[in-house]
Length: 326
Image (cartoon, rainbow, N blue to C red; front, side, top):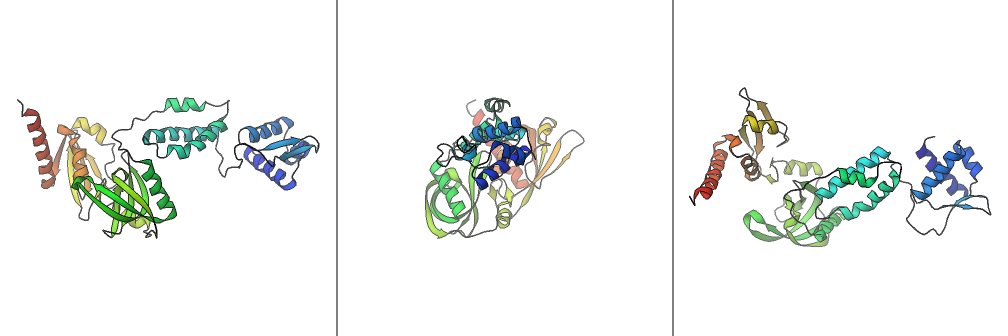
């Protein structure tokens, strides 16, 4: 019987019998006095089990009116290494979650994990010091809207949102049925069925200016259908007609690009002269253009001609902006 099984057995015996002597516990668990003492101490001190020794009755029982953190044996048990891995993930999440949207809800779990590690293991604070992420270009989301969207998702209710569409500089009121929250490139988005446009759309949470939870049940859309509709295109921008872009990167840029995932369906190959050719599908080129432009002179759009012209136009405009004063 391993340690986890012993904890459950101790809990079971005390619950079933109400009072269990030390000798009975040793006999049932088939362990030494020292091991049983450690198990009882762990249940009390680490897992908040309200176990008390009743001297008059000569056995262990649960304190009926215990004050303090609630005790409940978890459905999952973690080794010390697994606890450390989870705390590392928490540190990563905190870095990504600059707006504090998820942290308050996860912190109680992290405190229990830290306590479960104990003094003999690597201190939890050491884990938090040794992992650092530097988030970039995150847009702020109001906690109020994040929690409201989460509530609508879990209760399967519709939302009424006042939404600002940046690229059109337009505001509109929409009724949506939330399907899924998405974290993409440091920002939060909502995949939802839009009852105005009658289709699955993606909404940036930071563009929600007002929101209200409605009583109406959300329209159910299978996640497979959501995936099919949201995967048509490159990045956040979607469309129905796909085109393929052929990009050729310089040998210098190729060292990085050959290891990057631009699109799930991308095709890449090394060229004899050290350059790297990458082909990616897209429907709306806006995000693709931004990714191309960040490589500057180290990438050339080979085709299609329309995308090549757009990039050339933007590079030309940038050049004129920097040379106009000369």
